[in-house]
Length: 508
Image 1 (spheres, rainbow, N blue to C red):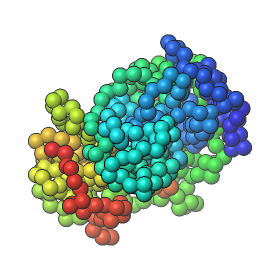
Image 2 (cartoon, rainbow, N blue to C red):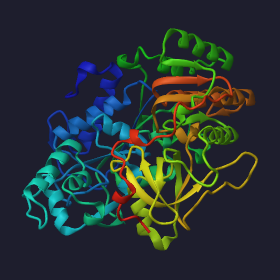
Image 3 (cartoon, one colour):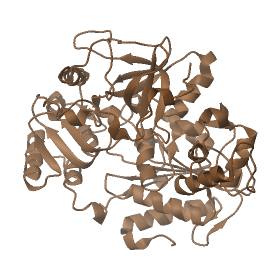
Image 4 (cartoon, one colour):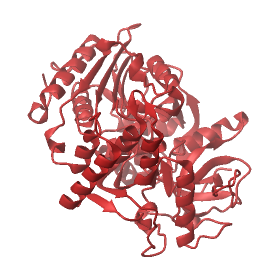
């Protein structure tokens, strides 16, 4: 085995060997570092499942490095090199921008599933730069681009492995080098999918069609997709196609947040007993907070996680009220959640442009201010490689006891948004934040309701997902109270936020 075994647990090492054997059957030998041309008509799939802290992401990263060393080329939604029969490729995918950005921070060049389904069409002269950056062509001479600009592009590509980022470093905009988008017509090669518990059947079938060799990484203890009746795609797979990681990796052994998450597996544990456990951990470790109120300052960047929609709406209204937000407009710095794109089929290219910039359902966004045209908003898309975008927007703010949402302003069509100061735990799957506030009264209501999902009390699945969204600190909020803000909403912490005049080429 050619893996970094010094940091692997026994079951991680076994899982690595199992995937290596799968890849060897597909013509990629990690031990020998050899790649053979892909064989036609053979389909392989495997799922590596494990709870939070079992080392799934570490395993994915190690496999990516080994494939890279073997000569497998990583492809993304940014740019895809010209096809060659002997070339072997890997795509690393996640269901959301946030989940993909978590992998990118670990040095794994991930993109979203949606982004890989649609590929950009490059202007031919700038395609020459992309091929040079990827080592497939000689350094080109492009009119209007100096040697210094190309050097900046090369340095950027070596750092980020992103063709659009490299071209931006050379002084180009997306509208200069991307002429359109097209749906993928030809299959790819090897696919890794993180947060695979979020996949629905249709996405899984699409991925099986695109990738002859597919490896899923997921947590079977999370919530199933809303439209799946409590079932995950893992349940469709054969016994031999699934491997579960049981041991908690030693790097996560001293983590009170993960300890609490794994305690929920005890079938005899009740809600009140679990809350006493949270309270005890909070006394011992400041990474767990027994909170008497919701901290409003945290809500601008990490939403409060709730079960009930009514709770979500009340918290959003309270957040806006303490910031003295007007009813007819948004304040710069207010958080939003993309709820989809409302465009007719004839505007398919515009839809693809918006989605390519990260405005897919569930994307977290910060409102920066109005755009230059009526109905347009300047937005910061959290986790997107190029986060600043100006787009036609439809913003919906729900109010308690009112069926229809309040719309402070809107374009006739475009990206739709809900307020993001609070979200349901279902919608939080695939995301992580440094600090996470979990609204415990909602989980108590779920416990009192006595509902089950996939053979487990619903409150436990909700609590598990909510708790494992916290990277550094868990706030277990036990009272329906809201703090006062320590200052106004801000956008200067987002880094490099442009002025309205520097955002050119707004999408009409």
